[in-house]
Amino acid sequence: MFAKLKQMFVSEQPVTDEGNNTQAEVITAELTQLEAILADNPADNNAQKNLMVKYNQAIKVYSSNKTYRDRVDEVFIKIDELRNTIRKNI
Image (cartoon, rainbow, N blue to C red):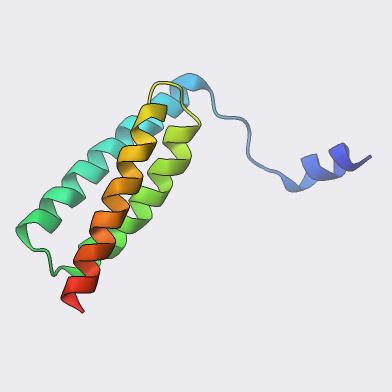
């Protein structure tokens, strides 16, 4: 009974491995670009916010993908580094 109710509210279809790989590659490219922007200007608040959002998206995508799962720890380390950078700028 609850399974049918849950299906009504869940509109997302399961992502295939191929689609998940593509999504992980796109997020990786966006992270690289945002990290380069932040390296040039560590005080750029917009880049900091966008990077934090992308890191959180990356954790979700990477953890659900066997190929990228080993990068999750790296993302957590980068989040800590970004938080330290934000604290320095405040």
